[in-house]
Image (cartoon, rainbow, N blue to C red):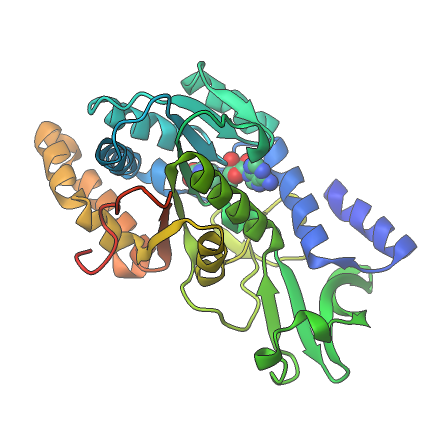
Amino acid sequence: MIPPLLDTFKRLITNTGPISIAHYIAESNAHYYARRDPFGVAGDFITAPEISQMFGELIGLWLADIWIRAGRTEPVHYVELGPGRGTLARDALGAAKRYGLVPSTHFVETSTALKALQLELHPQAIWHADLSTVPSDGPLLIVANEFLDALPVRQLVRTQQGWRERMVGLADDRLVPVAGSASMDAAVPADRRDAPEGAILETSPAAAAVMYEVAGRLAAQGGTALFIDYGHAEPRFGSSLQAVRAHRKVDVFSAPGEADLTAHVDFSALASIAQSRGVRWLGTEEQGRWLRALGIEARADALAAFAPAQAAAIHTARERLTGEGQMGVLFKVMGITAPDWPDGAGFGPTA
Ligand code: SAH
């Protein structure tokens, strides 16, 4: 059976010409997430909170610690962007509660299928289509794990005729990347225009817009935000767009809406945007180092002592989250706070 979104794209491109990569990703992922639970062994991919409760617990402790040192302001609101099954929120809020932090719960989510799953674990939560409607009457504790990587990227490609937008066109009835017809030279920073033919410059206007809004909120009403994703700390050339289906990488253009499309997050660009809004950038740390600084080893030992039959599984999960060849180095944790909030654990030279 031919996936229906593929047909729709083919018709659209035949009738009106190539579409941008950003348009392609936005439509594909909206379709992909709307109707399914993509996580776990039976799904397409697995995320850190689904690997172990330790991940969400340490995030909850991090939030409680910084909130206590910032003066325990109430009301305070937990806001999660793209909460998936709601697992991270459950583990984080459970851990935070032991330290007196009991915020109201707000989820920014667009998927109907995932909202239904989140409701089972969080009957008291309030859902939002975007950040504009989250409360403005107290500090926000914002968490986003593997959210920014699902947002559309725009790609510019260097051709013989100069820079062009990278688009999706049709060749022999298949979707293929093509260069757009309009010049995009003016969109490329002067110091990067001289790249060799074929070079691709990737940016995410959607991720930039989220960071702009989050940072503006923190500067205005206090609070902190953690963004956890795979990505790089320095700008670079090349396409990082990939499609994953049933735990395997597949062709980005072969099955739109049936595979998860993601791109690396450019943390350096996001840190500059945050700082331009007046918030403090705490750092962008490797996930493994950050979790170790927060005490994941002691937490794993304690869980293993409590459930000896699970000890091997608990240590395998810890290794998956922190190991160098696993999620420990490729995944980064970026922290930002309101200007008058203190430093957070796990960032800086002691991490
Ligand atoms: N944080 C979860 C899920 C990551 S998958 C975890 O770590 O397991 C990406 C999540 O972002 C899903 O919940 C998806 O439905 C949501 N999402 C994707 N694009 C979105 C958008 N534009 N607005 C709001 N939520 C979005």
